[in-house]
Length: 355
Image 1 (cartoon, rainbow, N blue to C red):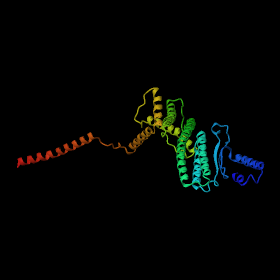
Image 2: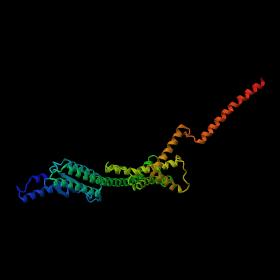
Image 3: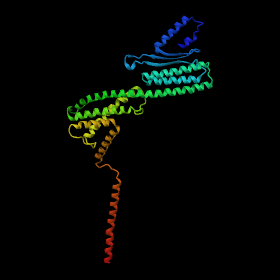
Image 4: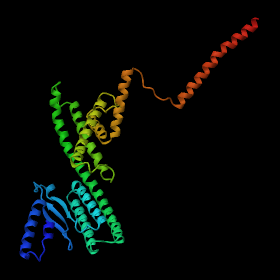
């Protein structure tokens, strides 16, 4: 669009014809790229930078109302004699791609307009310098631009981490739905192998551990989200993968909760639940802790591993002796050696008397 308008000269074409051509080109551009939000036109060359917003499908949904922001740039003519400025403009394009794919609506709008302002400033600098800036002026501009880009990248990093945590939390909510579906499916699976009484104490404790483990996993993540580095996520791996990771967290917590239930019931975990109705809450509490703390789940797995090892070997696992045990063993060995030598001395003495 810019090239066609740049070729046309007001002296050669009537102003009304030029205006019509511009409006047709503008309408065609906005139809394909979206509505122009901000634009900077160069006065000396047919160059410009444009920020557009294009509506997405299903724009009536709250999370799709912001639309898609795109940065368009045609600056080869004005930067023909300023290659370093052209490189800065290109680096801004690559940063805009990352921002568009990672950030949510409001931070994305702020960052994209920030990049637009920086690129407009660079084009204005080239025009002020007559298209051929000196090395000194270019170096000063590059230093100033790098400071601004560092501020922008810091903002991008902070906003991207927040966006990743929000998507991860949304994935956990989806994971709760999966846990509920699995809980409803479990009785049908058990019925294939035997009868399950849902009103029995064992079934109630099982489901209490199943749900408590999933909730414990969610609470663990939510408490760590208060800290900036509490939940470390790679925000550039993609939205879907982050949501899937979040969805798997409650499922993993439910698995740990069921593991705690079986560990207590099979006496693998050396704890005894209280008798009576309070055993239900006891099981639920242990399952919540198992889902909340992966370290506790590792303790349960370690106890199970030790029990299986003892059953397979038929012997008690070797344990390192303490200092007291070492001292007792040394004393016993010394006493044994003394007892072994005493009969030999007595025998020698008797032999001498007889001689």
